[in-house]
Image (cartoon, rainbow, N blue to C red; front, side, top):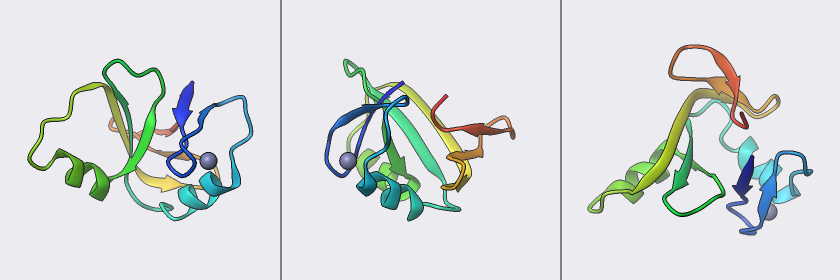
Length: 92
Ligand SMILES: [Zn+2]
């Protein structure tokens, strides 16, 4: 899975090591709700906090190809509780 680092804007994939900025970034979201979004015509996924997504959606409709969210994000295991109530990886 390809995803964009929100700090350095590099496209990473799940087989690559995370850049250190990203490790800190995810750590700051520990215990919160996290969104994984793919915009139309973009191949890489992006991660957002609930607050960020709400701010983005204000006043303009978001054109999304794919959106998933997890509650109680765990930065140690990179998992969270998905919308079906199961604990799953945010990279799957
Ligand atoms: Zn980065």
